[in-house]
Length: 268
DNA sequence: ATTGCTTCCTGAGCGC
DNA sequence: TGCGCTCAGGAAGCAA
Image (cartoon, rainbow, N blue to C red; front, side, top):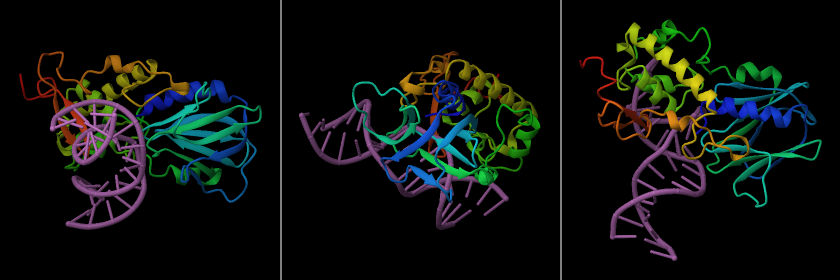
């Protein structure tokens, strides 16, 4: 499941393949994969730049159009298919040099959006701060936690507040910050929110350096795996390094893992 | 306004 | 071998 570090890794590798390429045709193999809100033919589409916003991959062109991809749970981008034809290819983007990029997605939640540049701001209007930006600091967190009865974990997962965190990294961030995921937002202290920000930055940067976390579905471009799974401390773990059993619960429909010893301020 | 549940989807893993 | 069940979860939509 690609979160910010995985999407960033994919973008860095994408650049090698699409630098200077022009899209001449897009084929949709599964209805609903492509959401086209443009009012004209956007082809040919010369790719000028690729960048990340939250978990979205944005392809900018030198025309009035943009292409945006969200991989959701199981989306992958593949340039070299290899010998055997793949199942679950939902769309294919063809370039002027005869090459193509496959959009592969088993669970079909992923989408390719085609938009006019003038609706860019509107497209991302509900997206929160980038977690690695200057403004995403302890006082911003205190502001979004204020008055909330929802648990801190659920708040950190809300893309309209902070854009890019998913289940794996929120679990890991709260472990490193020594904060219980079940604490209500309103009860998070200044000190705890300082630790959450520090952990968020350290963990995301380290995960990017390690090309993301490959647990089950996430793959880099061309199916390569990431390495950050080797550094996970609580996600899908049974025992903490302190010796305590990791507790597993469900929050907002997703698995939460935490260490009841290390993440409990009141103990010790 | 906030919160929490349901939905979309399919393959993997498990018990029998 | 195969059936039925549960689980994985990002984000939209909806109900309370």
